[in-house]
Image (tube, rainbow, N blue to C red; front, side, top):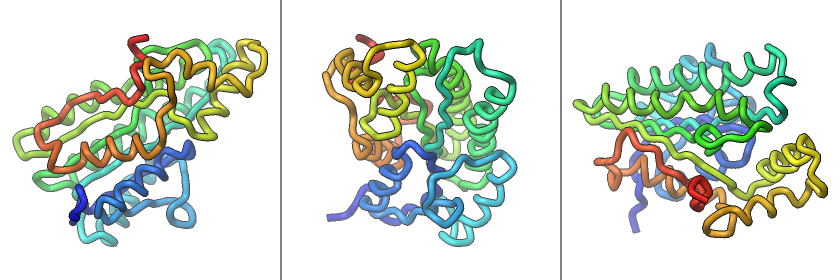
Length: 240
């Protein structure tokens, strides 16, 4: 049975939260050829803006062209906003904001005609909390950036979409929840993720592969009329 992405050539930027690896796995299962850059090959890595153009060059040479780009990188910082120094904000914006803009620009320039960019956002850029407020603020750029790309590329068939994820059950996200609980002073930080899931409408965390399936769909021809969209992958958490 053919996959959703048979014949697609995909450049994937992945982070260290487990989601990028899952997305790459799902894209591959759906028939895509995927290039993941970074130290040692398919390794989680925080890409700096100055590295992006070279990565596109490597991917285009390896794949023979690029049809789709996935930006699945999020750099997290947990703490009260007033406790962060300039270096924290500089690192957050370098990875989550500036690099995202450069990836978006290179995607629009390098993908000829039809093709797509799908970025992973986080729910806390839309409905945040003090402990991850700076992370959310640095990711908030993705919403308007995605819409602008979608509008500018529409005539030639280039699409841009944003998958905004909530509580996805990975060791990294469980660690983030525990660190948030520690900052707040909540008892038993190790149970913080499970307590948070109790506020999700579906009463469960999402799986990394479920995120991968959403990304694969958005990159596929089945989603060719979807562009400029923010798709919530949060189990209804935003509305509960």
